[in-house]
Structures are given as structure tokens and as C-alpha cells.
Length: 207
Ligand SMILES: Nc1ncnc2c1ncn2[C@@H]1O[C@H](COP(=O)(O)OP(=O)(O)OP(=O)(O)O)[C@@H](O)[C@H]1O
Ligand SMILES: [Mg+2]
Image (cartoon, rainbow, N blue to C red; front, side, top):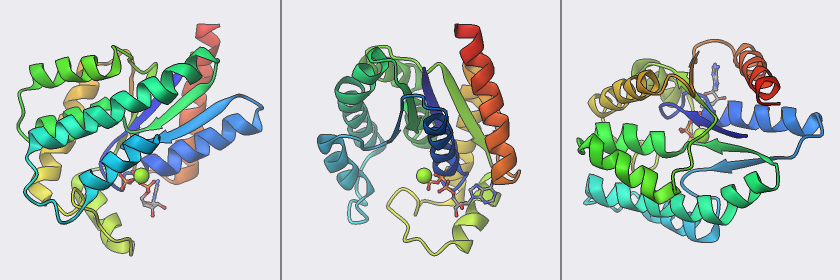
């Protein structure tokens, strides 16, 4: 099973991905937790280029291809072999993030974005994608509460995040079969319970 977490920065993806991974480990299930961009030696190097605050001149299309290159390496080096070995693969962001951020946020032609996403991943589609739905305003207020240093992409404006947010909702709506939209404003534990419930149901159906 291949599970992805999507949503705006600070929506709670990493929190939930980690909780789900720990939940599976506790149940003695084989599980691996990955993050995008990154997860392989090469992908981590691409991550550094992408998030470097000095790279202000980067075009949306350059950004998109770097994400896609990083993802392609991750899929072939790690995700596909683990799925073959019956692991549950949990990925903190996947190509829907590219569609929302670089595609919708960067005003790229979505038809072409879809083609590159498919090409870069060899057509590997998640079994479940959780969209942690937190509005740009709520996400921004969470960002201001924390004291983490922001990267190049997080430094972009609220107007950009509004486009990305609407992009995510559109993507979830177009891919209803695999997407589950989760209210990200609920407490962490409540969201985790909701997610494990949905995943367990899906595992039972697939058996
Ligand atoms: N349901 C929640 N309610 C309140 N705060 C939360 C909730 N989930 C996560 N947080 C807090 O919000 C912050 C961001 O969470 P997290 O790092 O999981 O988000 P993220 O979606 O992975 O962000 P990024 O895209 O920047 O990696 C953290 O401080 C986390 O503790
Ligand atoms: Mg995160």
C-alpha cells in the first residue's frame, strides 16, 4: 500500500505521516516513511537546490523539473522496491504537491504537468492520498507561532498559497477515488484516529 500526505506548509502532514508510520510499526507491519523532496542521496542534493534561499531567480518550470527529477529517483530507488517487498510506503508529499505548488501556484499548463508527473513516476499512483485541509490563513498563523527558519518556498506570499490551496481542493475533487480530505484544524490525535480508521478499512477491502 502506498499512502501520501498532501496539504499546505504547516497543515500537519509530517505530524500525521509520522504518527501513522509509528502506528504500523507498533502493529508489527513493515512500513517506511519518506519525505519529498528527498529520501535518496541524489534527491536530498536536489532538495538543497530547491529550498536554497539564494535561488530567488528560479522559474516555476525549473522548480517543477527539479521536483520531478528528485521524485523519479525516489520512486525507482526506494518506493517501487519497497512496495514489491510488501512494505506500506508512506510519503510526506508526492506529485500532487507539484501539481498544486508548481502547477496551480506557478501558473503552469496543468495538462502538461499531469504528463510529466506520470512520466517521472512511471505511472505510480498512490492507493490513498490524504489532503490535510487547513486554510492558508490558519497555516500562516501556525507558521508565525513556530520559530522554524523558513525556506525559499515557504517565503512566498499569501496570494500564492491561496492559489496552491485551491489547487489542492481541485486535485482532490478530480481524484475522488484515492483522495480523502481531512479537516486539519482538528486536534492531532483526532486526525490520527480518523486516518487509521480509513487506512484499516482500505486494507480490509484490499485483502
Ligand atoms: N492538528 C493540529 N493542530 C494544531 N497544531 C498542529 C496540528 N498538526 C500539526 N500541528 C503543529 O503545526 C506545525 C506544523 O506541523 P507539521 O510540521 O506536521 O506540518 P507540515 O504540513 O509537515 O508542514 P511542512 O509542509 O512545512 O513540512 C507543528 O508545530 C505541529 O506541531
Ligand atoms: Mg512537513
